[in-house]
Length: 459
Ligand code: TXE
Image 1 (tube, rainbow, N blue to C red):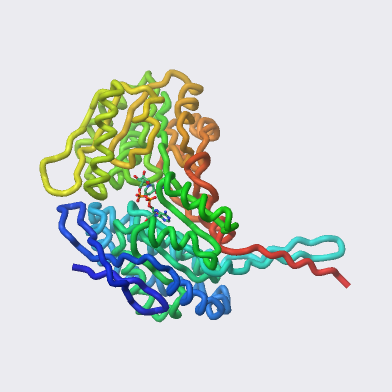
Image 2: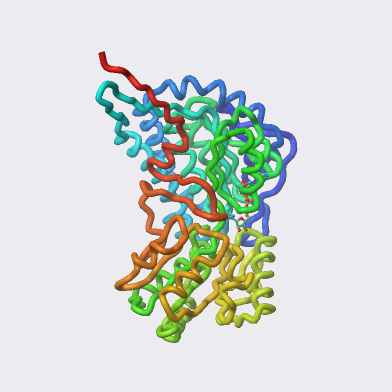
């Protein structure tokens, strides 16, 4: 049994109340989590550490990021084991997706920081120098689907730019954030630079968003929670980055190369049991290749390994959409059942026969459930792809016109003939109800700093 504690000012401490962390694999209690309601101690610690941390040079902070990456990397198997334990995902996914990317987030921002150029703008009689000052204390709130992957995506650039941090991982998957805290204390990261508090979102999460000394909030999670975060933080003029839900389309054009398309679309459908905001949960297929695509897709689905979903209440939510799909006239083409074994499992499920405007095909399910739709023309594909309130990501599969179609999709990110192929320098984020702001490379640097211009008149 793991006992999780808060990391505040370099010490592991806890309030008196705890609650359980349950394994999605078999329903056993794997850890106890402190139910923190008050963020004052963490704010005081972060405030105390601020001048020392921001007083380091950018290059010194890059070295710290590399030290964190080195330490995580030297324990990567343990990190993957813990992530797999907490989320139920297969070990190879926890290792190759979660753990690998968590290390890389620190590595990438260390290197990115070393290569940052000073920004100047010359005028005939003056020079403008752009300084990037730290914001101060930043609040980082992350979800359960890719726990350390998504938290480290925020922690690394926030540290790079000289901020001190109050991080709150999801109460459903807190173990690897606790592990990161231990790594940082082991390597001697100055006390109070990274504070990690655990507990329920509406309690400690809300306290972070409300605290006047926390000047920026980077949030990844559900759209409904994002609205609450925005409503609280915006009137306080906090900087806000919101990475929210998605209902992304995988669009298979008539000239798609099915050799790469079928495995690619399957991965987009079911990786991490469909619990990635970038997953392609709507598969749009040109009617001329529908039969061929579907027979290959359903055949290859037989050997696609997935884990359980995150917990029983999420399983029930996902299954309620399978029921809804039937009421809406859908046909179950694969899966649709709860396997008879302990844990929060759902068979990978493929549903046909639904209108692209049905609730099942437009609301975020966030599980191993995909709807299939046919189209007859480019315009119809584009119109279907853009017909939800979300606009996070998407993929287009075509030999000749992928980019032309991709440019017409109302989403922050579109892949052509691939999916989840990530370059950490590029902007990441969504439009419409999928969020506000971008992170990644310069966009993260911009979010986690205040750009200040100094205009110097020439003699
Ligand atoms: O997210 P929440 P949940 C979607 C997906 C999923 C749904 C709900 O559809 O079914 O969101 O998931 C904290 N103030 N995504 O319940 O509740 C919370 O403790 C401040 C998409 O996990 O939004 C957690 O740390 N914080 C997503 C974080 O917010 C609050 C990935 C996210 O939790 C808070 C995960 C509050 N009032 C779920 N209430 C993606 N885009 O990747 C909760 N939190």
